[in-house]
Amino acid sequence: MTYFTQTLIDALSLGSLYALAALGIGLLFGIMRLINFAHGEFVTMSAYALIVPSADVTAKLFIGAWNWPVLILAILSFGIAIALISNLLVFRRLRNAAPQNLMVVSFALGYIIQNMLMMIYGARPKAIGLWSSLTQATEIGGIRIPLLQPVTIGVTLLLLLAILLFMRRTSYGIQMRAAAEDFRMARYLGVRADFVIGLSFALSGLLAGVVGLLYVVQTGLLAPTMGVNIVTFAFIATVIGGMGSLPGAVLGGLLVGIATSLLQAYLPDSIRTFRDAFVFLFVIVLLLVRPSGIIRLKQFEERV
Image 1 (cartoon, helix red, strand yellow):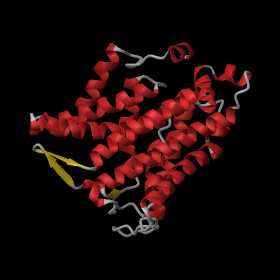
Image 2 (cartoon, helix red, strand yellow):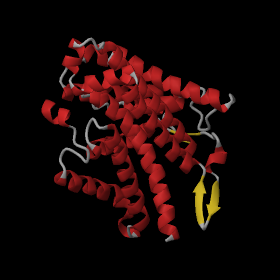
Image 3 (spheres, one colour):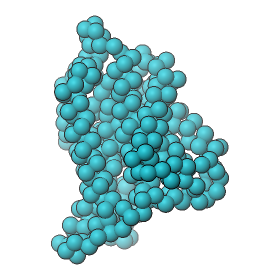
Image 4 (cartoon, one colour):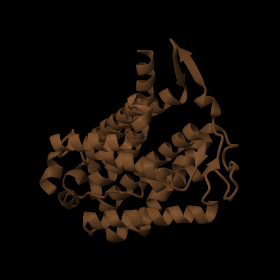
């Protein structure tokens, strides 16, 4: 029972990380029908803002000497800036393109960012020590819990609550919900398209910055391709939760994290290397039962 509880806590922490990334993808899909596969590179670039450009294996902290509130603010601001610049230089010019074309463009943008990071920082992973005290485990009833795990879960719940309140209680959030339901009608009613889309990208970049910071603290490593795995599982979480549904994205992220951790813990050693294949099989079965995801949105079905 202790082992299962330990695994479940690990699963919730991993699922929370996927849920935050899925939220960033879901926000843009709800407004633009954009499946942004460059979101992983937003995560990566936010994390790389921590260090001085260098090809050394060991990274030199660039803003790590600052106190933690300023450090967090700087990373989140960098994530927002990356997302807004990508919108201004790339996606804004293709706003009327078909969703599949936008998806291909996001792939290309992600590839460009990856190679740019390799040119500036080098391709080798970099070790970085940031808030190592958060990774130290505390034993409670035979269960070892690093402080970072409840922090990750708490941050996810807090951000989800904040976004839901923003979407329901503020005029900007109501405009975003209206645009997600019927973008053309929302524009006829006075919703400013540039502002709503820019705000969506800003929130997506903010979430990317949070994911990048938590991931670096958890792993202690930076790599130009570190966001690829995150965005892959985040996209899966978005699909199984229900495309365009923010609560569905969080639920999907938690399910993917739980499935990944449980399989890692309980699969026999001989087939444990095929863990991800079993996760994808789980996703296929779930989508066969509910093709539109766990939380089905009427406006998405109508527009498809």
